Amino acid sequence: MSNDINNLNIQDAFLLLNGISNVGPVSARNLIQYFDGDPTAIFRANKSELFKVNGVGNKIVDSLINPKNLEWLCSEKKKIENRDASFISQPDLPSILLEIYDPPIGLYVSGNLTNRPFVSIVGTRNPTMYGQKQAREIASYLTEAGFCIVSGMARGIDTAAHEGALDAGGPTIAFLGSGLDIVYPPENINLYQRIIKQGAVISEFPFGRKADRRTFPMRNRLVSGVAQGVIVVESASSGGSLITAQFAADQGRTVFAIPGRIDQPSSAGCHKLIREGATLIRSAVDVIKDLRPYMNEEQYLLNFDNDKKETSLENASFQNLNKSELKLVNELKEGEQLSLDELSHRTGLSIAETMSHLTLLELNRYIKKYPSGKYEII
Image (cartoon, rainbow, N blue to C red; front, side, top):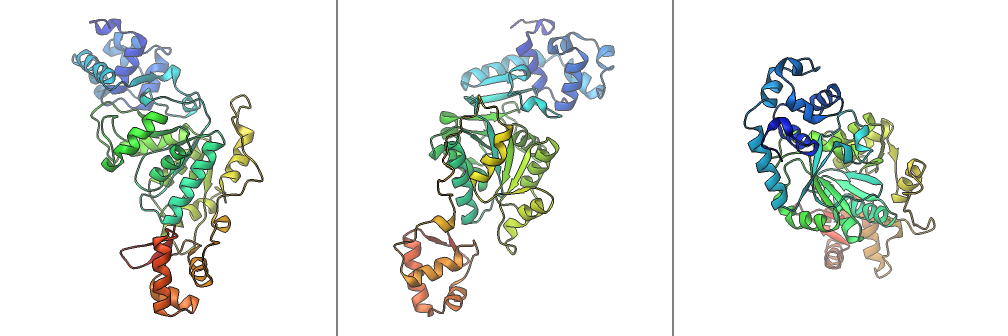
């Protein structure tokens, strides 16, 4: 790399442009377009030339001509090298990501990107056991069918989706709302490391950038933008999952939603999406059938059996359960959380019988008991 800011190579110019404060994806796009796709020309331009670019004002110009830019660039390149990461600039980004209105200038990557088609799975940070189960199973099935699962490595549904893909032996990619050197949430450090080994952890933010209210929506637009379709598993009536779904709709991606109980708050967002036109899905097979027309046949790695049993509670094996245990399971199979008294009343079993059977079901991992005293099927 030259010691002169006026003699940057293209890759370094993209990296520097990505890290400069006050320059976002839209202003960067305007700058790159104005200078005929050459990011190095941005740093050779004088103030009067920069002011001619649409949306560029004093703050952006001051950032672009900051005398400390070269020092920052040298430091950032060392961090990339020390973490065995890479920076992929716009020309080399996945082509589907370059189609969106505000594509990233570039992406920091730990691990390896795959050439599989992408499907995103998102949802609430506080899912039910039913939601986690569906996220894992759908992610696993789609991975086996040849897709790469995308999510944001957040608690809840994101985590379940990544784990489902990894457990199926396939790659998965996680977009972060922070720099690559910040693992959030911190308890996902092991998941972070697993993803790097089998897929990639990705961020458009420089090292040291902490997650905040601005970075999460920026991350969400990439989760949707890189994928052929976005699956919302569980979501409250507002929140990040619905923002991601809205980005997907605006970007021309297919939005899928899994229905739940009408009285379950965690399904309110999915029901809202379905009412607004999202595709209701019952299993991963529905996703595959809907997305196949959009896939490049040469890329299409699909290898699935249409007659294969769909992963659902209806197909779950409860053959080892007795009649009383089956009664309890049937009351819980729709994803509802019920107390001991409610289950006793619905099944006609005594409190003592109900408690005994619930204990066995919990020990055998058919159900889970919450601190509230309510039970839910796993």
